[in-house]
Image (cartoon, rainbow, N blue to C red; front, side, top):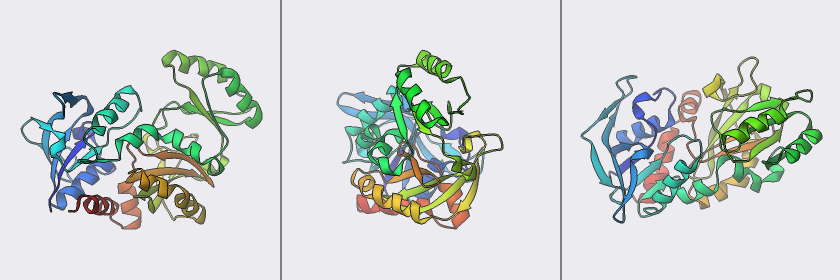
Length: 314
């Protein structure tokens, strides 16, 4: 049975169709006969008891620069859709959080993927705190003295914004680096949020593994290797994706976290693993589908849609 599907995402006209996971999800949905609608988060609204969006019917094709045809602009009631994808990129700010509150009002009658209540309550760098034995030593604090104490204990650390994304604002502070107080001052001038510090993991030089889980089950992984001279492995900042197999440790981590993800409606999740340690659980707008499909010759987007269609009885 064809489904009506809306994508809440950043402008589709500017995505890289060889890498963007939202584009791949839309492409797979279209190939199954589902109808597509696209809107940006700023066009989501509550009006007269309805959750509405102004956007466009969407047709996609694998032709960069000519990959999205938009129909006539329309205002729609999102409760009339079978599925809404929550796919805008972080940062996980109050604008992002507000969209989850609004989409809560139509879910689960309209299936919102991922479940917006738990996206709001399980942002990437916080859900890992439920699994301290799987993660490197970690502290979250705004208090500079707390951050200094962590630095004194672990010496070589990673400092980053709690709600950042894509490797932005990530700093490695070696034992002789005197910039902790300056960085704290800089971040404090930007917002009132805490910072997160973790013990630096030397294994990152061999790569930061992105493991993709679908409805709590691992379907594969890619390895993201930092560019020369970089600590960050994010592909946004020059990290190189490589083919890699799931290790026994990866499977152990997935077995621990998978049931919780499934229970909380987190259908498409990407976790980050460095060496033997889980560092993030990405539920907001995970990436990596297309790279994994190319490396392993599997249809990850198809697996995701199989789950969604089963939930919708399609």
